[in-house]
Image (cartoon, rainbow, N blue to C red; front, top):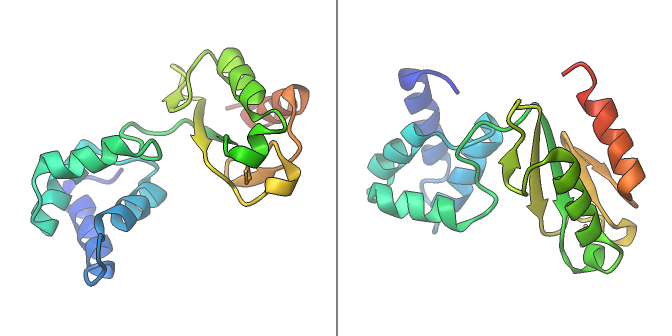
Length: 158
Ligand code: FES
């Protein structure tokens, strides 16, 4: 995340892009996380000032949605779908496996900063579940062995 002046400038630009939208805070938070990978504490204050909200209100929205991250993400980002279609073909088992091999829970990053694991609710790949996304690339019909292989390839040398 950039230093304070540059960060404030980016936050103001994102807010300006959503200025006329109803319920702008959510898309603003998504944009900021999309750009920086997480929502820094400093951003909470900046957004509160820009949107005329209290810090507690901004923080409340961030902590309500599991999608938002308040710490930097790992170098490899794994997102596993837990929505219904994927659940019916083994998504829960896959998530449990990922949590076990990585030694973290969904929403966390490994202590060495190599992998972040997140649950998502539908990746638009329902016919090919269980679905997951590794560093932005979509994968279907995942099972334990394929997930292990993908993780090993993606984290090699990281
Ligand atoms: S339910 Fe998993 S991709 Fe849609």
